[in-house]
Image: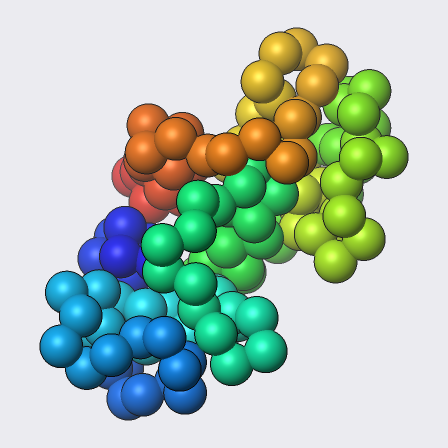
Length: 133
């Protein structure tokens, strides 16, 4: 949340209602800004700031960020992933959009690995692809 909020200069820090994001947390402003921009939604009132983010969750955030910038991603990029049936239903369309737009690639040429944890390097790479000139 912090990486994408800073990359997009998101400023709306109004409390988004996450029970586990205290006002004195270093990530408070970024989490709320990303949530208020519609990029992150949390889980039933919880953000879970200490959880790792999966690749499919990262794809959802980056696809939403791309759409917020007015980009039209299209679809079909997901078809190259042999493990596309392992992608959660709530994330499937977003993974497709991010892959089609060239924002996210697979772990191999033909696998996405949706439930593997995202590394900071992977997150930085997709954000760079989103904002590069």
